[in-house]
Length: 401
Ligand SMILES: Cc1ncc(COP(=O)(O)O)c(C=O)c1O
Image (cartoon, rainbow, N blue to C red; front, side, top):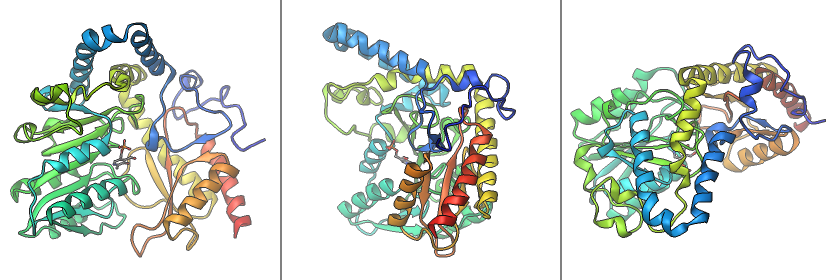
């Protein structure tokens, strides 16, 4: 029997409540695996997938009718509902496939030139860093990366970013909830600085939706990118692009299509023939989580992640990394076992294969910090899963030495 093969369906779960077994049965998760990596790819509940499949069936029944007469209206309806959920003026809110596409689009619109500086932090998502590097290389701009240690201190974080600004800084690209570190950034405080210094602010909000309530119109950003397919449980390929009024006419989609002559945001709605049932299912995902109770979901996931990381840390004689987090926490790994990407990948794979547990493993973010395990929690998780995993991990690490 694997460590995950203990039936959870009959168990009480005081952290969620009496209806937990019913709630978990909303997902088709493989029961023999512990799922602690929701932040990476989300997980689509049955009801949301069924909604998507019902649209796909309509496409199959009459593709011409769907693409010619239905799709535009459906996309617009879904866009308006999603914008409302994000606290966004619908005029500023467009569909993209994911944050990767949205970031590429946003960076392409930046009027950077030789000698300009683009400020980033060491918490940046690696693919977003590639996008910034590519854009800087194309125009002769320079990247300045500031190092933010793991800490709960927001003032220190803001002052490190402020200290990285020079009279050549034109753009700051910063996470709202970082990927590897899972750190929540004090975005509103950061936005006050960029506004005062006339620096453009692009926010990577890939993990924000579904972690807490967002209010895009009041953040103070120039451009914000987000995903519904992580913590909002929509099908994959449902990203959001929000732009302040001065940027809207400057943003161009990743491909030129029939929508090209339309104004923003409709210019982004149909980029050639494609399967857009993921964004069309975003309202169903919003409804699904709203029925569970959004505040309940946010509070539960954060509390369970905290509990889970403490349980795992205690089992291996370690501690959680300091910081301000949503539904993902990091546990310090014993010194030296993960010092680079290859070692992180290897350990992650061993844990997945031998302990039947999906989580993330990352190398140290600064010279002073250890490699870490990234542990997510979602409403389908049970506190006992983390305790069970902690014990298995302790034995596994002892043998692996
Ligand atoms: C912080 C952050 N930014 C951007 C991305 C890219 O998102 P996507 O793969 O949906 O384009 C991710 C994906 O995990 C992420 O964690």
